[in-house]
Length: 174
Image (cartoon, rainbow, N blue to C red; front, side, top):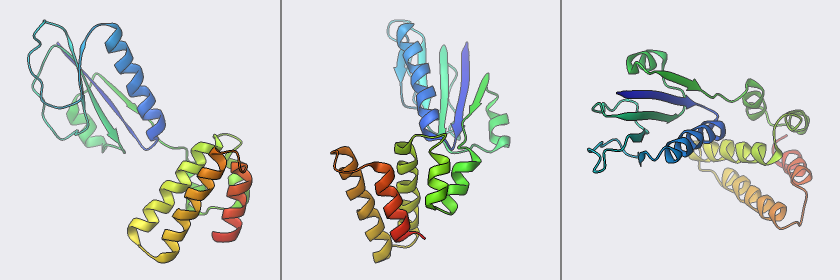
């Protein structure tokens, strides 16, 4: 019998960590693990654990567990059509989205009360990369380069990440 689990949402970090939990459990049970949508019969009769990153793709029934993994929200109608045994959704808190829409020093200090500074740094980098993708201006390229320099300084102990981000936001984003 095939069991279907759907993992989706905008919080890619929590989403991926949950997938790893499922994969580790499958390894403990000795299941065959596959990260593609093509399911072939097991040579040794072992149960299968298949991860599909395409929720549109139809997969033939097999013995084991199918995890449909999507970095982003799957529409409710599509989730219903999947007829999953279990659905888990991991979305970023609204507070992070509000902060990313208007990045300020005050907002940074509010958000780091509940989220790791490294995570917030990566979300700022993601947001600026999205901006660059939409508008490949010299200014957007400069912002990404400055963030890369901040990352190196913080990782090599040449600066405190919070202080460096404070300066970056004050100088470039306010």
